[in-house]
Image 1 (cartoon, rainbow, N blue to C red):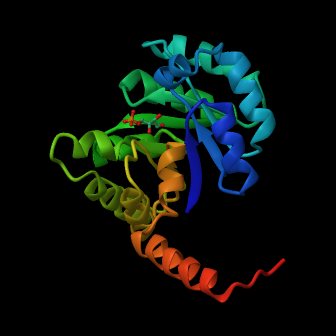
Image 2: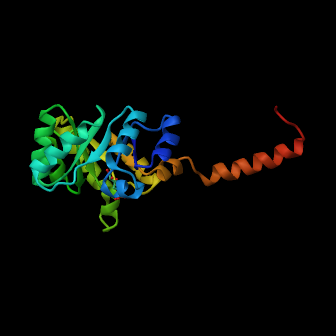
Image 3: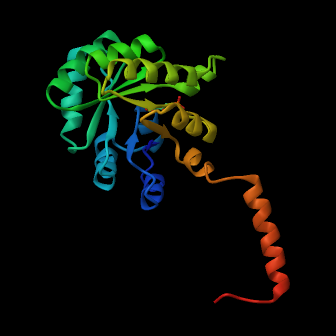
Length: 217
Ligand code: E4P
């Protein structure tokens, strides 16, 4: 499973990138707002650091506007993925932009039918939001499993990009289902390294090591 980082925080991306944990990046208008940076400037910086797909989201609500914004965002770098919402207009924009050979990430997906339409429209990535479904007491991972089955049934090449990930457990579940990609905030990716028994075991080893009076270097 590929790891995308869901942030526009360049320092946080760099830390994970240096460890080989970043296959791509996703941003959205809220994350750009949080960064306090200019969208083109910060996105260009991210694209120069990470060779994989970097999603930059359009904000127009009509297809023509999305297409114009998508073309503009695509000028930033070759690895830009244009992010459009899963509306009818978004699907129209997806069809046009992918027809021009551009990568498109269709976002704000909350149903298998929406994902089916995105695949038919030629989306490069579909972004189902699991955390926001969980917030409504609907199991977001059920949606990932449904989309996996539908895409496999018909050999769609659209990649399932599990989004709105809130926990390390979400990462494990996405990987078990066979999602192609998971995008998560940096703290969630780092939390995957944590285990209480690792901490406990390390404490015990350190205590015993101190008793030996030895040093390795
Ligand atoms: C994905 O592309 C979105 O930017 C993101 O995963 C949304 O996550 P949230 O529901 O935690 O805001």
